[in-house]
Length: 456
Image (cartoon, rainbow, N blue to C red; front, side, top):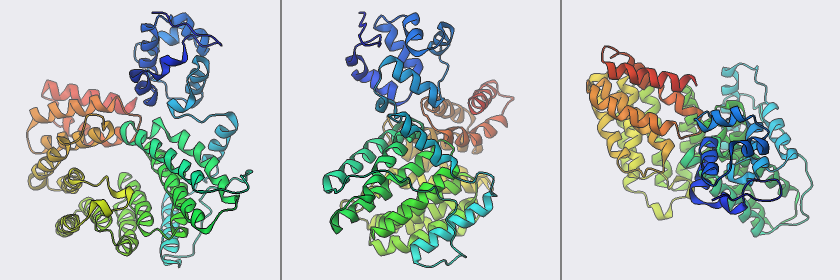
């Protein structure tokens, strides 16, 4: 059926609301979008004319070539009449400019160790009210934009921010930060205007909480696409707003997330400091589940530092806190930490130790991650990549090459569907372990496939 539309778009608006199409748009899978258009009778020539691409470019994309550049994605969306929000793109040129200026405001040339020290100093100053780790310096944080704001706001305005954050977090959780980061930062550009508006004290406190949560999501999605400096800036702002809202659990959440950033970049000492700092507001919040999350991540950091006794201690405490937690009373941000995640975190800690002692810890990592991976739904694609790659890596370490191959291929298949720079990094251990078995043809093929994926 040919759904040729009007107003410059080759399709009618209802095509974009079909379930498969919306899923492809959310993942920014342009190849799949174009294939759906072809099924609706739209020719390559029409797609090319609408998007400003050559027919050869359209043909390459139909064959599977990925489109990642923001300006190209925006041109495709506008040319075809796709609502930008369906692809997690900023809605207008002015907003896009503010997004880019926010990223460029950070001093990229500054030494990374200095940036980590400054963030820790800032985190301590915000959390404890004093510059415990040295003079507080927030020059690394992006400046707030001064834009016109409504004269007065109420709870409905705050609820709009909360609803946007929830919807965008769901996209990140399922398909990766690349599907929604631009939209998160664009929403922040609007949301922060409300700081200039008059409101009751109660509304203003809720506004601080909502802005803290949105900045935290902006930090997390920035990290997920490989933008470390913008991530740090957003987490710094999130800390400030969470502290102004007097929300101890949210302060702990931000510190936990920034600690995870440093774990990813192989800086367990810095991560451990942030997790330990996060224990202060976590304890004050009265949420055992919040404390459990911090303990689990401390265990992971100790694993990377090859401290098995400390890992065992923190795993035990994590289990104790988790056992006494009341999920119904836990803050929203921490409810993701179910029994599945408990097993996943214990598996991650033993995976870290297996780097130093594979005979003792690889089999434990496998057992724990199997419990985690089997319980997740197939829609949790980024989570599957991380869990399956960790499981496959430890199958190899434990000497079970065939199972490592089987699980490793599944991890790679999920990885190709996720818009996340972290996926390539998290597949590196699998590449290394498969590479140790290149005498096995299948292991050599997996090694090559992972290597190509990581270099793409």
